[in-house]
Length: 75
Image (cartoon, rainbow, N blue to C red):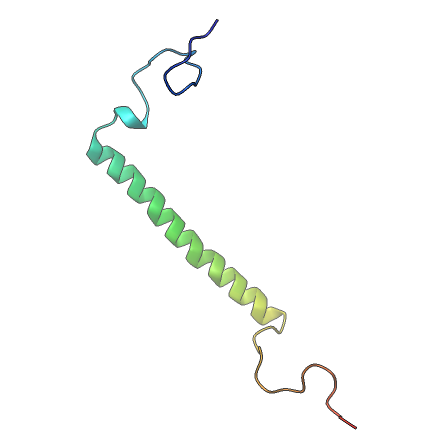
């Protein structure tokens, strides 16, 4: 039967001494900063894709004064 550690998780593999926590702080920071940069680049990329899609569908003209979407002639 597998033992459980203090947090209640199974400890099947034993303590291998690897992983993110065993790295020195500088290496952890370098890896974490790469992740932050990737997220930032992805946001800009997704924003650009959305903008192009909106322009292609004619959604670039929002609000503004035009007839409220019905055709215009009030009688």
